[in-house]
Length: 294
Image 1: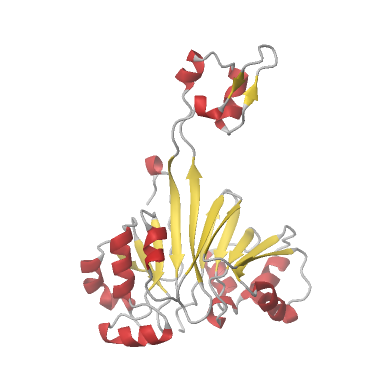
Image 2: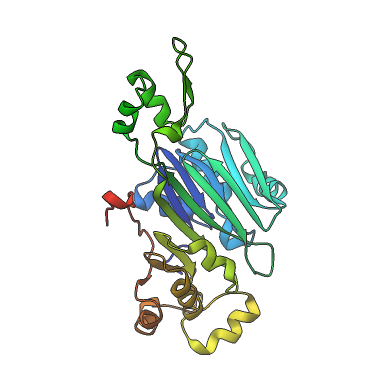
């Protein structure tokens, strides 16, 4: 649309940026937001329809112009390297390496930088995946327990970081479970688009901080059209959110025929009260539960 970009999502954590999908004009939308493409280290693709990947050549060139030299990891359904290779005919020279990870199973998990990435197969008319991005959080260090056990202070930091330590003077071995509490609630953002409603979506979105999900159509009478093209209506997405109970639901991937998504929200809020019709440029800072920012 003249005032609406194609769908894309950026996650930023500990200096590592992760992009999901890259429709036409993504690098322009990023520039409007004031974000540089240089820190992007990971791009995950849901599928290879043009509105989700056609912006890649321009973005790669923008990353090169921003003097990026570190490797870029690309994740997506089987055939990723072939698709990207075809698109790179117009962006053949890059100052950074491309690394490919092709998804072939219904569920796969990757750990890259601070992110745990769960990819899950959904139901579109070509292979398509949703993504759950998690930032785990370890339990608290129990300094009183460490003192009771007589663990030397010089070992505390390494035990907090999951290392097993042996005191060479006494021969005593200390393990993290001796002083660390149970893992605490981390951060989870779930992204899903171009699919019919399937149970796996609600499964991965359970108790997420933010669920971003397609709302292709707002009219109830377009459910048959959504079924035919393997998409979801706002109502169907909201019902999945009602099952999953994320902290918040944002709609995305609106049909070009939907000029004003907000006009359908009164009905949607009856299904899931924490739903919002997202707009270009929206962002949310999500902290750990005891220091959440809104």
